Image 1 (cartoon, rainbow, N blue to C red):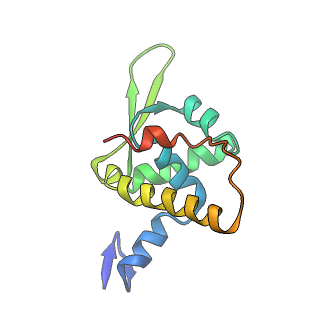
Image 2: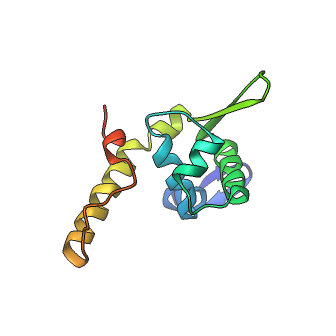
Length: 125
């Protein structure tokens, strides 16, 4: 058994699925892999997400210690999001998911050559 914050899990996969239970969290992490971004920049990068949903997902990822939110004492206020060391350990997992997705599309779909997920940034060492 596994316990996190008084919640019981029967296996480690259940822990992972509980944390990453939607597509937005993984998209946010993907875009923070090698950089820090402000809310506005994240929202522009993941343009299908609403501001409300982005706010909720960022808060959930912060509570799970996946991302770090840094507030600067400036006028206007500046808030920057980045990955924690725990979040950075997801890089090889997401890289493999990226590669698997490409393989899957090549086998069962069509690749138009257009790519908006900034893979080149994510494959830096």
